[in-house]
Image (tube, rainbow, N blue to C red; front, side):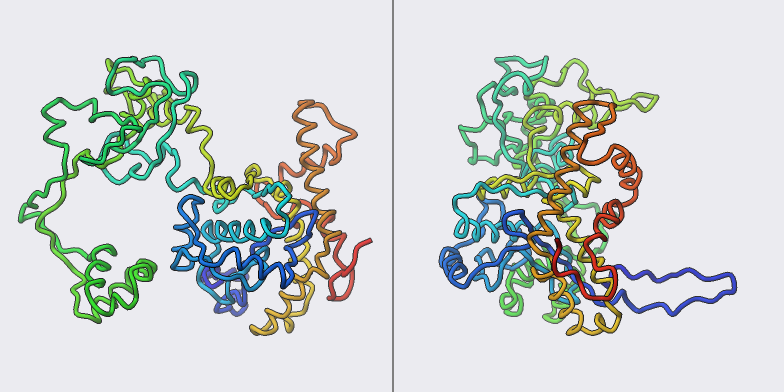
Length: 493
């Protein structure tokens, strides 16, 4: 991808250097699923595809399954498209500037589940994902102490979901008072946003107002108010995306593009469209909004107080994260710690885990920095495929047509056979068994472990700087690659 090109290079002692390429050349991003049952990807017959598409007709990615926002970002619509090929192996368009991210993965999982429910309805579905940033992304409206301000105000925490206070242990702190109107009771559902006037929900407990304000201050700061900006402090600034989109949607040009597509544009592109229809991209605000607590997130302090984790006599001691003079965390006055150790915050799932659950499947995120454990040996598959790709001459990789033809050949199920996938899966499971054995036997060397103890020790060092199977298990991966010539090994005994 062009974003990977570096504008600098090494120079030898004589001041000479090789010609710097304009880019890294052809590249693509591929996301693939494999299993011991079906191998690399999954073949879908024409009859099966017709049935799958019939089930998907007029259906949408929904908020209930956590995929609607991902669909809007990627496709510009929540409508499920008709599938033309197996979604088990997907790649971004050649030369594209968009990178594969968590939104693409969410849609791929939803598409795969639509296929599995037709092809293998009798199965239980479990997905193994490595701990990448895309796979481990937090749930969009999940319980997250890092998405909360200390006090009310700002946009942080305004979309945080409600949570059920199931019991005292793990939820309720030592300062809880059963009859305190600002404190939640066991069995109630706790909300994290002060409701707007008239939008109160009797089924959700939210503190009636910020507990640390006086009665007068609560009334004065309840609602948003517009205040004048002093003349000497008024400054011209560029309009925000929201402001430009609102004005563009009042024009015929903006309405033709549509609000969803306008939000996809970067600010410079929006500014260009605005100039094209005579909209000024600069503004000098004369007023500003002074936010009230209505409709705002309650914040860490109120949330911890509602559960009984805050000592009101020492209110000024509490901070988001409080440290002493030696740099040690003072847990009893650290709000993120106090809330973060509550059971519901501890048990919060990632966005991908939530999507899988709503689809009727289970997602397991493997530990960080352990590619050898990733889904059914998928990292070994990537190492194998990359090794084969590197063996082909440069002439086979030049130009779009050649590059795509070579990729199709390498990704073929004739190359990465189901038998080979099973060997890679067995290797990953051998590591899992070894880690379990080592954990059960602590520091004892396990002579009969599936993976030798010395290999684990070597792996610990390699994992500090590498995560690819070709780095930490090179000899194993290359044992399945042809030793001479540039043709891939088509069968493995």
